[in-house]
Each structure stands twice: as structure tokens, then as C-alpha cells.
Image (cartoon, rainbow, N blue to C red):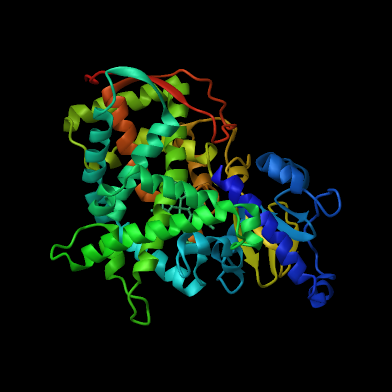
Length: 480
Ligand code: HEM
């Protein structure tokens, strides 16, 4: 759902950029001799806007089948060029910001998380903030977080009855918000993570409307709520940050790492920036991470063969290590790891990831066709479509975690920019390893302590983020 929202936002932005670019007649003159990508046939002016709003994945998939790995969609006159598949995505993922940038496309994030924070920040600040984040997600920190995740998971599931029916999406979203807060944002944020904070994060998300891109400060109710939420979060987090700064006992968490971080010019990160980053992390956890956790479960419960394999793996681990759960034991969970990877490939990967083209570049398709993408285009890859490319993944729509065992497919899938759920190159997601340790801990705990059965219909690949995934559970100890 959040990706559909982001997609809608980009489309409106595209219009805005077009109006700006159309003033620049030089662009047309400089591009008319170039070999440009094929343009998707669509109604003039509104272009593909309607279909993109209604069913973006199918629109992109159908055009990929029709036009191949490079094509341009006109949205209210703005050219939006899709690059699908590893052969044509290298430049997208490796080009410097001076050639393909994010800055122009994320202005709407400023009122959500604050000026100079994450995607709303100018490039040089954003890149340094990602480095700060990476420090808090390095392996020795992850090793330490596992204990905290285990405590949160045990606490959370101890509140379940002996048996019952739950909505997996709702439960995992709640658990993951609490756990992300504990590991990354620190003890104090976790203790203050009331329903109020969750509601405020929801209000931030509710403030991203398509109109927000053109007029991020338009005085409408959703924007007012978003601004109030940001101010309140700033107040809550600032108190916590000030206390932490004066605490004699340093903690081992991402918050401590952020507070100790310095920009290249020697300045420290401000309370407002730290607060914005904490909100952004909660936002990602609440949407992306929780949905991947729910999909992992839904696929596992739907595909009994794989569920049995995971169960056998857990029994073997119980035999070797008893009930202990540590970073190195999580690393032994090969089958579960592949099941998560496969659910993340086809379940709920981002629909698009965008860049703004500042400098012409050329791509060559696997069929040997060469196209130039001109300056001024919005360029997109689509993990949702590229992750199902049939020259990369055999029988790509099939849920098959064992595909990563076949030498041929393993080679293809591990080639750069083939499996792009977590992006690649310069903007590779720094949260991928954290996502895996979180999901492995949660799912191994559930499998060891409950009998689980999917009781709602699960439409593979069609879940719209609003449907419930209903699961019946019954407490039991997995015996070896
Ligand atoms: C299932 C979970 C997740 C998925 C599918 C996911 C996906 C992605 C993707 C596709 C990108 C690249 C975007 C691009 O190329 O424009 C990205 C970037 C990023 N992700 Fe994640 N992510 C996940 C979890 C997380 C978590 C848990 C965190 C933080 C703790 C995180 C923080 C970030 C940041 C900061 C970036 C920007 C990196 C940069 O621009 O250099 N993500 N993520």
C-alpha cells in the first residue's frame, strides 16, 4: 500500500517536473537525434495515469512483456522510463547523484521527517546519515540486538491465549514496531512507545497524498495532522534524546550511535535530525518490514512442503542447541532464510524505486538494443516486476525457496541487480540484515511454540495490504 502511495506521489511529481522542463526547449533539441526507448501508447495528456493509479504492477508487467526491458510511459507529458532486469539496471544502481539523483523526487518527505533528514535532506547530508545508520546496523550490533528481539518476542507472545485466531498482519505490525523501537531506537523510546506514538506515525503516513508533492504545505486536514504528528514526535523524542545525552551510562543501540555521529565538517547531528530519523525508522518498520513478515508466514502456511522443511530444521536446531537463540544459531537457519528471501522476492517488494535523470545515459538490452535515456526523464526500476523476470528466475511466479539451491539459478539470482527487493549498488538497503534476523527470530519462535493454520484465503501475489491474513494458533512445544 505504501509503495502505491509513493508511486502516485511520483506521478504527480512527474507532472510538475514536466511543466518545469517544458520551459527548457533545449532539452527537446538535444534529444531529437538520440535513439530513445519505445513509448507506451496511451491516451494523450492523461497518459497511463489511470492504469498506474489502479493497477501499477500489471501496467508495468504488461508493458514489459510488450516492449521489453526499456520503455517510456508518458504521464501528463512527463517521460517516465522503466528499466527492468539486471542487464539494463547497472547504471541506475551505480550512477553518482550528479547523474541520477533522488533529491528532486523526495521534497514531500521534508514535512514528514523534517528538513535535512533522510530522503528530504540534500544529497551530501542524506548519504552521511545513511553511513551513521549503517554503523548502528553493523554485524556486532546485530549480534547484540538478537537478545533484545528474543525478549520482545517472548513477552509479546506470552500475552496470547492458549488458542485463538489472529490477523497476522496486525499482530506482526505491532510486534515489529515494538521490537524495532527496542533494538534501534533504544530502551527509552521503547518504554514510551505508546499507542499515541503508533498513531502519530500513522498520521505522518496519512500526510503523503499525491497533492503533497506539488503543494506539501497546502493547508488541508491531512497535512495539518501530519505537521501536528511531526511536532509531537519531535517533542517526545527530544526529551528522550536530551536525557540520553546527559545519561552517565552509554547504551548499545542505534540511538547512541546516531548521537555520537559527526558530519564530515565536524558538526554533530541535531536533536531534530535524530528525531526525524527515529520517526523514519519506525515508519519503515511499520510498513515494509511488517508486511514482509506477514507474507513470509502466509506463504509458509500455504505451502505445507516448505513448512515441514522449516519444522525439521527447527527440530534439528533444538537438538543441537536446546532452546537457546543467538545470532550464530539464526545463521544456521538456511531453510527459513530461503523461505523469507523467496517471500520477499514475490510477496511485497517495492513496486518502484525512482531516480531523476540529470545526465543522458545509454543502456543495452539483453537482445543487444541500445537506448539513450535523456536528461529530464524520471527513471524507475520495478522490484515487483524485475524480481519475476523469467530469464532470471525459472517459473518466476512460483513460490520456491529451493530455487536458490540450484547452481544455475543461484548464479543468476546472485548476479548484481537480479534480486532487487533490497535495491543494489549505491543505495542498497542498509536494513536487510536486520530484517532477516528479526524475521528469523519471530518465525522460529512461532513455529517452536504454536501449531498454526491459515484460515483465510490467501491470494498469492495479489494481497493489497488491506486484506487480513487470519491464522488459527494453538500453544504447544515443538518436540524433537
Ligand atoms: C523488508 C524490509 C525492507 C525492504 C524490502 C527494503 C527495501 C529497500 C530498497 C528497495 C531500498 C533501495 C531504494 C532505492 O534504490 O531507491 C532501500 C533503501 C533504504 N532502506 Fe530499506 N528496506 C527494508 C527494511 C529497511 C529497514 C529495517 C531499514 C532501517 C533500519 C531500512 C532503511 C533503508 C535506508 C536508510 C535506505 C536508503 C539507502 C540509501 O539511499 O543509500 N530499510 N530499502
